[in-house]
Every structure is written in structure tokens, then in C-alpha cells.
Length: 208
Image (tube, rainbow, N blue to C red; front, side):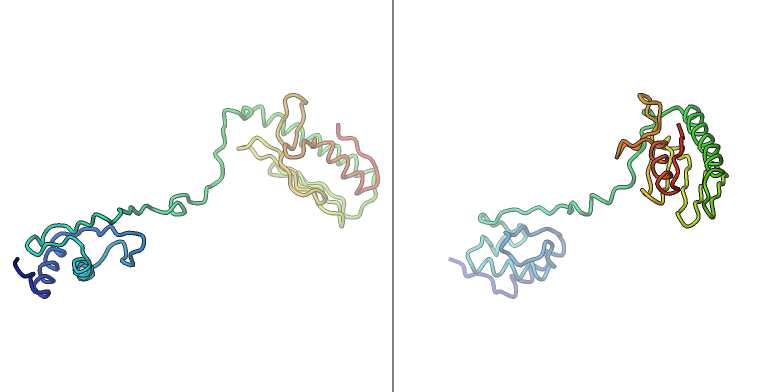
């Protein structure tokens, strides 16, 4: 039986092969070798495997290392790198009111509120009570009691409310009740304002 090649000659052949043919070593989960090894590390691993009973033939040093007992491991991109933070949900315009219909309903509601607030201001004694309407935004100031802001949000076909009592809310037009409803709490815009203003100012207000 022919004696094996000297280790130095064998290492030289393996280095030559590794540089000319870049390949992966698929190692078992217990291996400490990284996914892609350097040519020198590949040669060292090959020599160690050859001594430990691996199938390495010096006369065929250019052949890929074949290990029957080694399982193949595939690496894929992590899910966290693929699933980026999602942006705002896309609006389905097919389910919304036609824009001209939305403007008609929202403008009528806001203008009616402006008139009712002006009448209400004449009947209550509140320092700093003031009403302002501009750029499609209705503002009701109640001095130290806080400020209400009501405006249209055309892309979503909503009326937005900022309240010093209940905070922000977005109201959609409900065809069944012909009113603006906050879907989260099912509260009616006009009823909410009646309740809060009556409590803040100490006098009932009718906005219907």
C-alpha cells in the first residue's frame, strides 16, 4: 500500500484547489466553523477530518470533500430583515363617500356647529369664550376650560375632533343614522359635544 503524501504537499494542493474553486463547507450544527471558511481554514479542517477518518484521498485532492455523516445546513435571510416596519394602511377609496358628498355633509355640520356655538356663547358667562373658523378648521375656545378643534380630513372622509375632555377622535359618516359616529366608541359627534359642553359650561346646549 502506497504511503500517504507528506502533509506539507497535501496542504499545498488543498490551498491551490480552494483558491481556484470557491465552495461552501456544509457542517453539522456542532461544528465551530463559520458558514464560509477561508481557503486556509478549509484546508486545515480537511486535514483534521482526514486524520479522524474522513474520506480524503491524496491522489484526488481536487475533488470536493465528501462527508457521509455530515448534514447539510442552509442559511436564509432572517425574518426580521425581511419584515420591515409596516407603514400606514392603504385607504380603500372604493368604500368611502364620494368626495363631493363628503364635503357637502361635513361643511353643513361644521357651519351649523359654528352658528350654535355663537348662540351658546351669548347665553353663558365664560372668560375667554371665542369662536374662530378658517382654513376649514373650527376652533372653540373656552378660556381656562380648554379648546375644541374640529376640522375635515378629506382623504379619509372624516371629521376630526380635539377635545379638552375626551381627547382626539375621528368621526365617520353613518348612513344608517345620518350622523357622524366615532367607530371605536360608537358615540355621536353632536351628542358628545352636547354632553361635554353642558358639563364644562354649566348650561345645556342643543346641537341637533
